Amino acid sequence: MNGRSTTRRTALSLPPGLPLAEWSHLGRQIFVIADSSAWWLGDWLIYGRSHYPDRYKRALAETSFDYQTLRNYAWVAGKFHPSRRRDKLSFQHHAEVAGMPAGVQDDWLTRAERGRWTRSELRKQIRASRRVTAEGAGPSLVQMSVVAERRVRWQKAAEAVGLGLMEWMVLMLDEAAEEPADASG
Image (cartoon, rainbow, N blue to C red; front, side, top):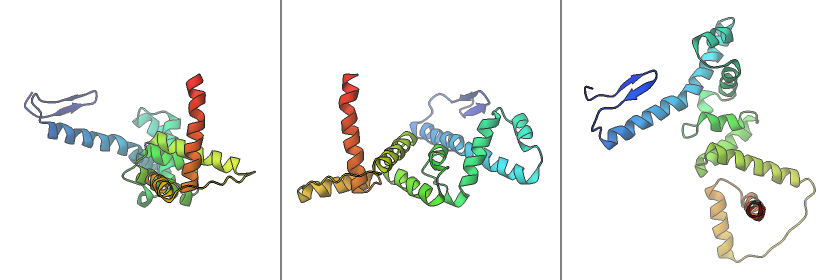
């Protein structure tokens, strides 16, 4: 090997003695390419829709992806104009909220960015929110008094994950209620 990294379709060859900083930089570059490719394929398909007949037949021939995967890429890309896509979040984050109205999408993506949520955490938070909404159909009033320091601490914790205080409290209570059931299983 000549001291340079080389790529093939099925391999990445790295030179002996590659410095940690270069190895790290290369990893970040690979991640950006991998994470960007879903957007690129989606945009490519959207372009094909307006310019070429039989775009999916052609796309299937040009890629190794199945029809549904290509349709998903195009659908998600079509739900987010490039100006609304969040660089700090993955394509999969966007896919989680793609079926929602644009304003709601933006709200959830902002929360995910601020809280540095994984895609799985975003999904969990959305489900928790839906439970709160569904259970809120017949609400019961619960009141409690807390010292100011505790409320401030809770408020900061809620803001850190992009939630309102009440939404965060319900989420925390739900999680606490699930723990004993998990322990007994």
